[in-house]
Length: 210
Image 1 (spheres, rainbow, N blue to C red):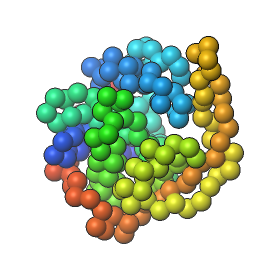
Image 2 (tube, one colour):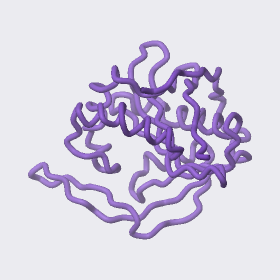
Image 3 (cartoon, one colour):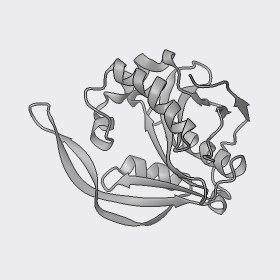
Image 4 (cartoon, rainbow, N blue to C red):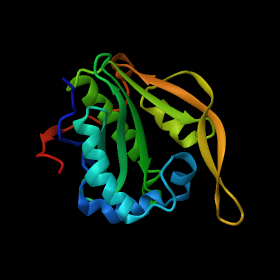
């Protein structure tokens, strides 16, 4: 029987991590059209609202129900504004391991939201879901993502040479694929000892995503 993640909302003092819903379509599309997102992810460009709606109503629910992963909308607690997305993927329920990635909207960067959201997700995975390993992969030149990994206590395990496709923007505005390395990071339960103080205030069950 396939294991699946539950529908939950995770709270910190500043953030609420919750399932994506159709009210997020416009904000998600705008966030995914950012130049840094285009450079360091495989998100199609330009990213349309139809693409955002498909992600929210089809892709994310399927990933969860088939046991592969989970997508969180990261929102500000006070304004409820969408500031980013946390994704869990390539989940191995026997090993109790999953891969974590994060995207933060350009206007919300520099506030520590990525590390806060990633850290509270990791704590939830280790404590509530009894996971034993979280893996992150960052492109070799994506220093901002690497800083988040270091801040939450990840350990660099090595380099996957030539394993990542990034994108570079040409003078005419078109995007060109650029091959680079992946840095592989891991996070184990014991790595969180003494890391930060962004504890989850609680976990709240949701109904079905769709």
